[in-house]
Image: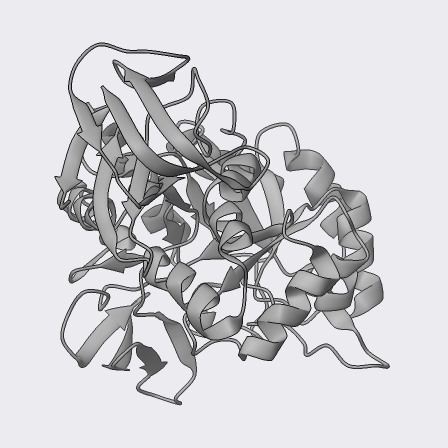
Length: 378
């Protein structure tokens, strides 16, 4: 397959006019056999990768069924998200192990919909002070053995385990104890700057939804945000749905961290793609109006009702983030964070042929996954 006349997003994060060759399920170098498709005037970008979402279309990853994962994967592919790493909630350990086991079995199937690349565990080692929409009844102290059980149940799919270091005096030993089989993120934490810095120095390398479910960044108490800024090996998730973070704070994050360390996520819950109404997240009731989802009990934000492609559009259209930076934050940056950038995240010969065509107004025109056309509207 050949795509011609596109504005192709390159590995140096610029657009160039040209074509793309696809051979089988991979991007090719030079020419390729098969159909020649005209992408006149469209941006050609890598397929998006969402490494933190809970659900959509009435389904949640923590439903713990193959059907739920399949429905989530189908919706995500339809909006240009070609790979996912869903997030778990804070639930009983036995239930989490069951959910992870279902995901492990699902991942062994032939891929349908967005590819399942991993799992992002938000809990249960978090803070009750910053629990957000997590169920405090199931919060636990961190445990290497428990983390090992999670990774075993997932057959290695668990890519991150969240941690509130201030709640766990032995957090450094925990981080050291799990470093050989999964990464540690700071998640739903009330840690101060010094504690967060100590956790990052011990080997934590990821921050879950920067600004949200953590202390505010202030001039005398910079908290987790300041610690992320001062730890260049740490990347940070950002929810650009227009609800979770003010546009100025998004722009500030780019100035503090640079575009290479930010990972756009949706944090979408099961109401995404659905009408307004009452839904659930982690067993808690959530009221959704437009793209705003809040706990029915106290009005706390409860995930988002926005997919990653819409977050990318919001970042560019409403927040002043250059398209080139926004694309990186939704493609190559999450691929690097998940450790799969050797195969995913950029339009490069030898990598998985996942790409999206957008018109100049960033409307979705085509989705190609693994060299197969899923959507073509040109």
